[in-house]
Image (cartoon, rainbow, N blue to C red; front, side, top):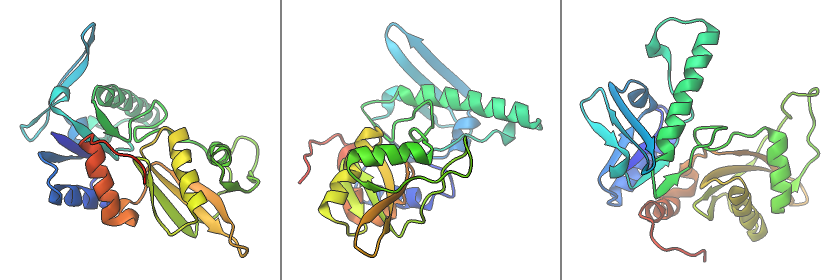
Length: 242
């Protein structure tokens, strides 16, 4: 079984689900965070034999880690509204606890998880703009000095004019110089992400200058070529970059 985990309003993920299904990836299930958060029965074991889980969902179906071969993970958070009225402090605590539990569940799944969750974010590590700028520079991308509003606040990103999407080691999206495409793949590798959106501001002299990065890219920008790469990756098929 393969899963697409996404929020109901994630149109890019819904598009990818339909496209992967059309390519014959089966059985393929679409699961939203609300279904996981409202599971009626949860078994999660961590012992000498490893980690595993089994969830009974409200629709009567079951998700078991041993049955899952791969996941396209687009889940950024778990809802807490179903837990009842609570103040902001309790709501934040409940959200953090649910996220920690989901992180532990998702970490049980092998061999393929796109994107693998992190303690810094369910769809992969969230990073402030300054950290992304450092990683981008290390990957070989042109990066501007990052202005800050004041100490401790996030930097102000450049408005991106072009977007490159990295999926499982290949760059798609806006036609970009080959060196830029290679650097985007290196950036995704450095961030330990299978999926990454990289935005650029293109200067009058033709320089592609890094603007921002996001672990939840619009997959539609890569078209069917990206879907083909995801399909093969989820099947764990051998692949080498062209």
